[in-house]
Image 1 (cartoon, rainbow, N blue to C red):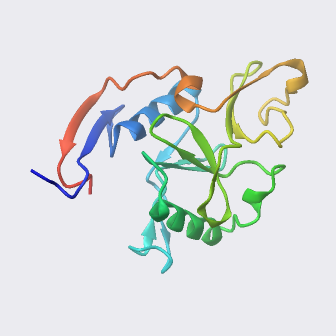
Image 2: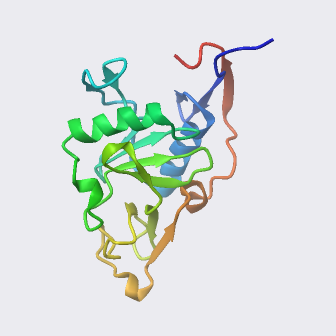
Length: 186
């Protein structure tokens, strides 16, 4: 039997259904790192999107960061993310390594990428966990290594950078409830 759709695995974690195992693991990682998040809360309306609406998977209000979780990055994700960067007034910001990271892609393995203008993903993105205060943030290597929460400077070895969100949080597997949804999670 040949199905032309991908079967989504809806995952129950901490009182909420997520559209994939990777989204649920991302929520687990944010919880373990003490990062407050809102799941699919905000939507951006625009004719630039195929369905005229785009809802990033997560918003991290304390960090001012949007997060899109996908198994792989493709032309469809790049197009809607490029429009989102423009519509949210983030154009140019994402190309300046001294500005904070504002839009992040988390892939199926947990690796983090900065989403830049044009929907391009850049591997110069790291999850930083400050060893002094324990707060997490997203940074590029071009950014000064100073914890945005407590001001600890990396020259004193207070910052622990990791390219993988799941590794940084110690999330190895998802152990919650999984429900196979044949309509693709819609």
